[in-house]
Length: 257
Ligand SMILES: [Zn+2]
Image (cartoon, rainbow, N blue to C red; front, side, top):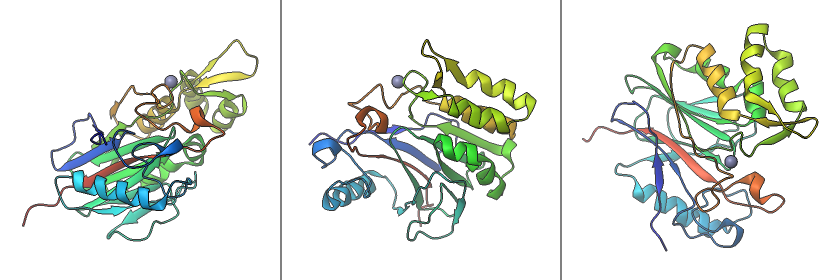
């Protein structure tokens, strides 16, 4: 079994913040989930997922409790003061050291947030439905840190090279937007030679929203989950077959006693 490989967030967060995404590399899952699947609800053997989750915990250089999420493509943010059962929500916020906030993904966009001071963190599960429903807006509103004091990192997700959608998607965003935001958002939808088909740029939609809300420090990986099957699970690439999920995790490192 190869060693697991984490992609560390490339952003100017303080050293006290741990932020990384897993890849498929390593792990005990087999078949369509082969590698480091961290999701229970996708049909993989529960024992494999548990082994993978233990492997992830043991790879960290600090003790952490894991807070998982029941992601529903909604707009609800959940504040965590102690780790517990997965809440039904699409973002997690915490100021408590030693809790790893986790979002599972396989094309959807995970958004990491940290205050510049490193005393408040959040992670968002942002598919197009959540973005449209206002998950970024609700998460920022529930945080104590003002947006101008936040840093953001966008993790691997499906990018415009691979994300062909119908015209329902641009319409969903543009119809609700103010004229100014609508002009910005138009750049996130490239028309194709196929009538009614667009290449949608999910990270760009998130960046426009974050910037308009006052977050100016934005970093992002250029990695596309669908382009790199050896590295990432991709819901779209494997449809209609099942596939695994990466975990995206952020934590405030506990200060050693
Ligand atoms: Zn791609």
